[in-house]
Image (cartoon, rainbow, N blue to C red; front, side, top):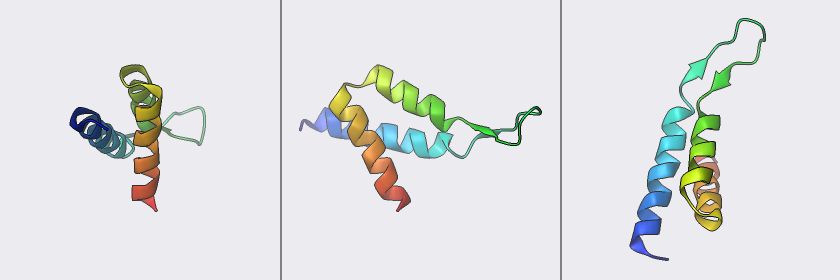
Length: 64
């Protein structure tokens, strides 16, 4: 894996972790909307498949 890919994977994992802390409460449902969904979509758009999967795997492993 190239250094550029590793840096992007770490960066997007950090972005996902930060965006997961931003919560938008919706008045019509008890389930809040978090910006982590936006971070996951952003990861999928910007990175290739393997790198995007690696980002989410790193994020999940950090959560464990």
